Length: 104
Image (tube, rainbow, N blue to C red; front, side):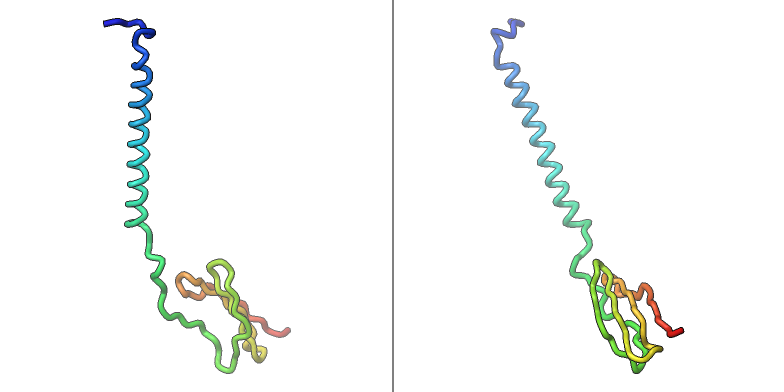
């Protein structure tokens, strides 16, 4: 066996090809693993909260509805007792809070 690198030029190329083959196999495993993880771990985007009701007092009217991010902002108008802004979570349908405006 000859140990002179000049007489064995294919050894370096062979090592590079083997290294790139291993790297390609690792990348393939990562891609397949990511796809499988996202298929089984991701929550269903179609799942909703069904029907959710927000408490609007009798005799009051909804003046404006605005969506900001995952929040629903509802402005309720009418007489002074009705004036308020309600904020709901659009993912769950739950009422987060409300601001009621009373005259001084």
